[in-house]
Image (cartoon, rainbow, N blue to C red; front, side, top):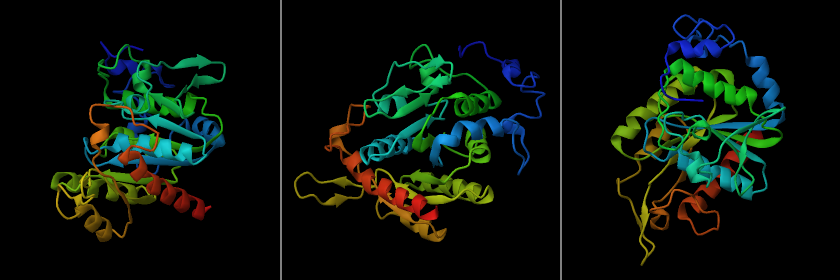
Length: 296
């Protein structure tokens, strides 16, 4: 699967074979409330998946993928069977965070086979079809949406307790497509307390509300730095604005994640209990499990 010399006509691989400029059934062109033609395939693939949680942010650089990977690690350590769909086509970071850099997807008679992390987490990412991690996925929106949905419809996810979907930031084609096509048990919205990040979080909240996707809560990343001498929390962005925004929309703030000096210079999140990031995500994972199980 090459990312070079790609134009709109590459969408001819879709069922209509018309190319993205003419295809009215492409998920990115669906009208509000319409369902895509491959709903049946997606639902069949997800029969063995009990819960589906999407992690999203208003803008990039706030640590959304770190939270997604940390949730996967914690849910796995809690005894759940976990899968992660890295739907951030432009910035696929999940393989790096879970120690799968350089791994490639393979096919079988059952479909596309996810790559297993050392914790037994099933992972699918666009980086796993590229020649190298620095190769750019130079595709237009409809093609990105098609790839994300192909990952859902054609991957042999098997039996999972939780499928986490790491969505690209913002309210573009891929987040819209996933929210429309996949029955989600909830969204987890990640933000820092910076003013610019907060501005874009409101857009994600209103998008989810319009699409009637339940929001499980907000997570404040890079919330504070813990002094190594006195253990005092130093809030680099001042008083939490994420908590204020959550209260504005009647949503819970389900966790605050600190900066972790031990994680500096390393992409992979350790699962040995020493990471402040991973340990801070544990209560967030517990709250998510409680929230979704309570609804059943």
